[in-house]
Image 1 (cartoon, rainbow, N blue to C red):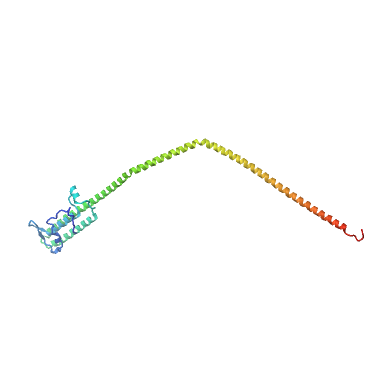
Image 2 (cartoon, one colour; image 1 turned 120 degrees about the vertical axis):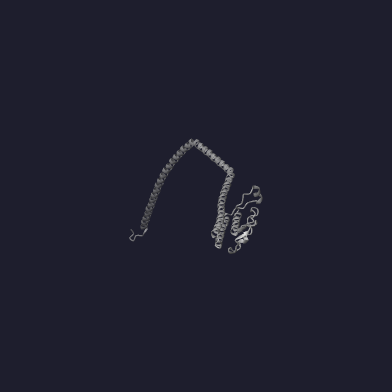
Length: 277
């Protein structure tokens, strides 16, 4: 995996590492055993590739020496948050690449005379690279925990600032609530005092109401008694009237009978007698 470090923070690539990308494109079976160094010495190809992988991993992941405050301010206006998942993936890819190159070097060692010595050197290079990657992995984990802690601290600081900013309003609301409660308490005390002061008046009013109720009940009983007496009197008057009516009808009937009888007698007296008597 090829990393592209930021030009403002990435150190210069060592001369021994330059050209490693070209070597990585050559099949393992055709790689030269060594490449010439600038001082005339020859460096094993496996070691050169290992140095390049470690350099790219360290620089690409961002494990550089800390800069001064002035350099940090001049480098960028605001640092972007680290992508720890991408860094872990890069470390994993580098570890896989290290293991692949060790397997390739191990196979190449079997073509040499000192096989064991060659494999031991390849293992030493692998252990060095894996150790660097392990340290890098530990640093990423520590940095992630530190960032989470910093995020929690910022969140707590933000909540604390919001709480402190709202404190005057809460204090004003609490003061208003206390004043309202005290005012209601005073009004209740005034009502209680007024209620106690009006107790004799309420007692007199109750007695007067009871007296009025008693008078009303007495008048009601008297009215009911008078009503009953008047109803009885009306019933007697009706009975007397009906009796008089029956007497008048009887007198009229008797009178009609007497008149009819008298008329009958008068008719018999005026009728002619056959014998003259």
